Picture 1 (tube, one colour):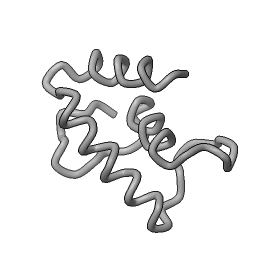
Picture 2 (cartoon, helix red, strand yellow):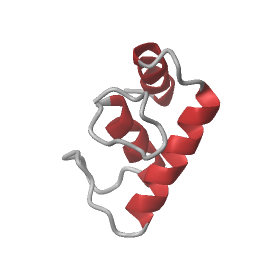
Picture 3 (cartoon, one colour):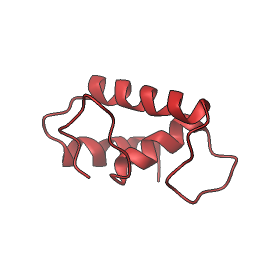
Picture 4 (tube, helix red, strand yellow):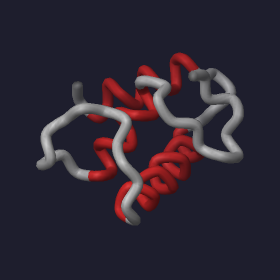
Length: 72
């Protein structure tokens, strides 16, 4: 799924969240992944961490602290 589609899916499912809050959430999860956190998705290893973070948030697999509006 394209980045634009994932972003639209997240924002549609979380009406109280705006794109700026989403970018912060993606940045936090990307930082976690870069610092050794394991992914909750089973994808190939050539996926960039930022894309992986966005996919995890879109699927509701991760909860970023401070963003309690995100549905699981």
